[in-house]
Image 1 (cartoon, rainbow, N blue to C red):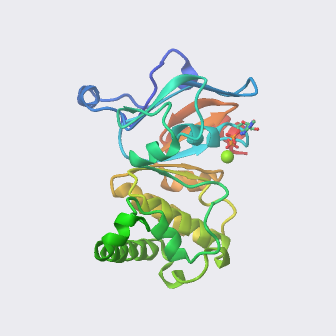
Image 2: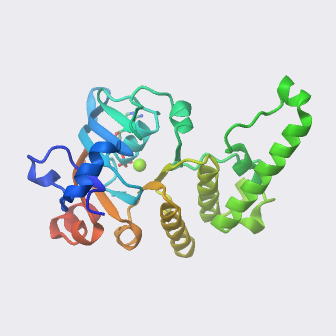
Image 3: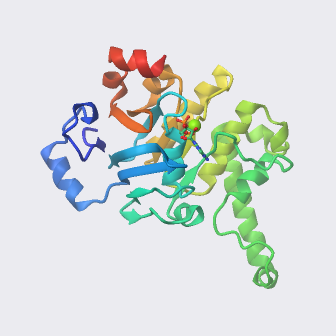
Length: 281
Ligand SMILES: Nc1ncnc2c1ncn2[C@@H]1O[C@H](COP(=O)(O)OP(=O)(O)O)[C@@H](O)[C@H]1O
Ligand SMILES: [Mg+2]
C-alpha cells in the first residue's frame, strides 16, 4: 500500500507523503498510468482561488477519505474530477486519459461515477427505477428500439435484474417499489450509492455519504464503501467524522483553504495533534 498516494513535489514538508514507494513499486508506476492524477490544479470563483496548486497522484484502487473544514474545497475537487468544473490552470487525468476539458457525461463514460451532497434522486419514481435509469447504454424509446422491441424487452429485463441486485447489495431490496422521495434520508443515501454503482464506474466519488444519517445506516454505508473498494474500485469519499475515516479508509487527504495540506494512512495522519486540533475539531 506504500505508493498509493504520492505527491509529485517533495520540497514542502507539509505536503510530504508519509510512506516511500518501494523500488519495485516505482518501477511498476513507470509502466502503469495513475488511476487519478491531478496536476497543479488551481480553480477560482470570481477571481478568488478555491483550489490552489492541488497535486495528487493515486495509483491503486483504494478507499480514500477527504476531510477538512467547510469551504476547504472538497466538493470543488470532486466537481473538477467529474467534469462539472474546469480548472483555471493545471490538468486532470483519469486512468491515463486527459479529462481536464471533458464534459461530465464524457468522463462518466470513462467509468467515473459520483453522488452529490444534495442527492439528486428522481423522487417521484420508485427506487428500482432510479437505479435502472442510471444504467449505461439504455436504448430508450427511439425508432430502432421500436423495431427491435424483443431486444429491448430482454435488455430491460437484464437492467431490472441488475438494479435489483444492486438494491440488495445496499440493503434496500424491500424498498424497491417505494417512491424514492418516500424513503428515509439514510435510505436515500443508500439509493444514490446503488445508482452510482449502476453506472458500472470503476472510480467512484461520494460527497458526504454519511452526513446527517442515522448512525446505524452510517455504519452500513461505510461498510459498503469498504466492500466496493475490495471489489477493485477506487472510492473517494468526503467525510466530517474523523472516526469514520479512521475506521474504514486506507488513506486520508486533509484539505484546508483550497489546499491539500497533508495525506497518508489514517493511523499516521489522524494521530497528529495539529491535524486533530485544526482540521478535525
Ligand atoms: N458556485 C460557486 N460560486 C462561488 N463560490 C463557490 C461556488 N462553489 C463553491 N464556492 C466557494 O468555494 C469554496 C470551496 O467550496 P466547497 O468546495 O464547496 O467546500 P467544501 O466542500 O470543502 O465545504 C468555498 O469558499 C465556497 O464558498
Ligand atoms: Mg462540500
